[in-house]
Image (cartoon, rainbow, N blue to C red; front, side):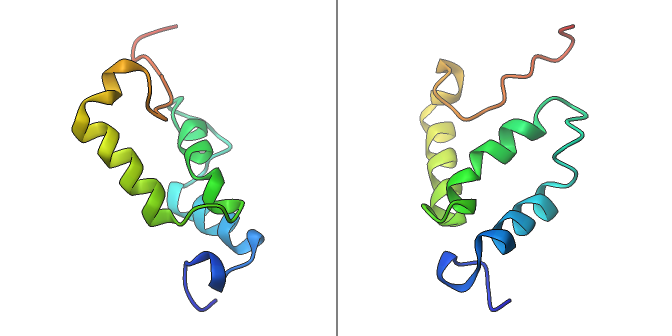
Length: 81
């Protein structure tokens, strides 16, 4: 594989990049991994580069949008059953 850019990868390679980067996304051991995997779906589908997704996420965090429910956060509440 030449790189991580959409133009340099196939959909299958991008899926593998995300899975390997996030770890075992199917286990959902802490309740957040599914939300993270969903966050990178546009990269897997070839719509946005990883850099764009990370920049959007970081911009919402810096503006304080994370507390308004507008984020791509998984919404997992620690201690909730």
